[in-house]
Image 1 (cartoon, rainbow, N blue to C red):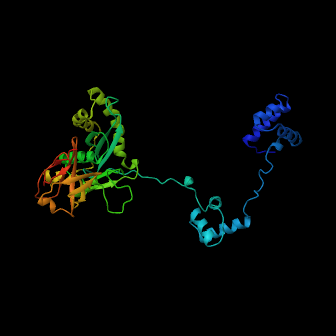
Image 2: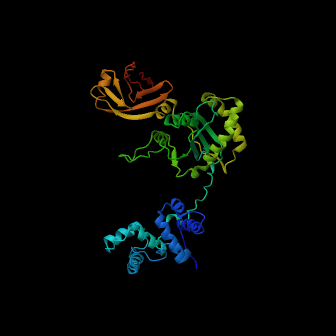
Image 3: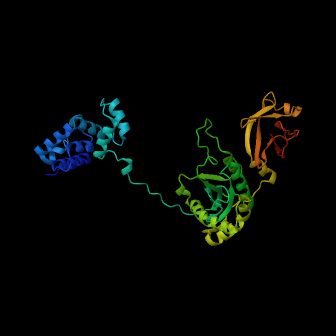
Length: 395
């Protein structure tokens, strides 16, 4: 006869057999099993009377006292198969309660539906196959961009981020740049350098980093990030990958760079971001000679820049609309900036104006979209205006 026992019952049986064979005392057995001595005596009597089967719980294999009636179970499954076919357990539980007045716990409904093949748990479903995406045909048709955080200098400098631009059709590294963090201003600098060298690609392919996409719910459904606005003004599309595997080309390049680039910089004795950025064009050339391949179509889809240098200065800025108060002040990033009380600036009171912010190592530079105005800057955050001239804000 097959007897089913739990680990706890097996341990009890082993200790009680030691007591019966006089290898340990009942007091010691009580200490091992964390039971009283009287309970040990009862268990020994049961073992002598019923044998090993006496150690198994008497209710094992018997129907539960709180089980639902079989008639109710068959009625519930019949309703689900006839009226609620395709419903999930949670929704089926809600409809059974509200429409058919059957108050059955949702987990019980889930268990019954699973046992009768009316619901397949997510863990047992077949995984959706993701077919590999073929490379684009032309150079410049799709550029994958990503930031890779790593100890690039092996302790010679702090950990930093490497911005990687790689062509999807050829696998060529088009631009690399080290920066302290993956920020909007760093992507602005890298993207401008890239388009000035190669032209404007058809599209960028990125992850869903907050630099590229607004991930928080906003009252304005059409709100876009500063980087997305720049690409719109340059007529460049941006595509967001749903997983790291989707942009595997740049992810694999990151893995290769974390091996080869680190060792190359060690041999060159490079120990700072400035030195590395100055040397990277040489590395890119040797990397592409080894790993780049020809595109299926020899056509270059990069479009030439039609914007002037001054127009690019305006595009590659952080632009924010601000309303000028009666006191000739405006607020940005928890700071209040005062405008010079001139007749030209008096006309701006109550109006929304687009202010341009540009990040440098020395601080923030600002300007406003106005044709004619005065230019003043002082240590108390005065802000003057000029059409194409950046003004530093001290303090």
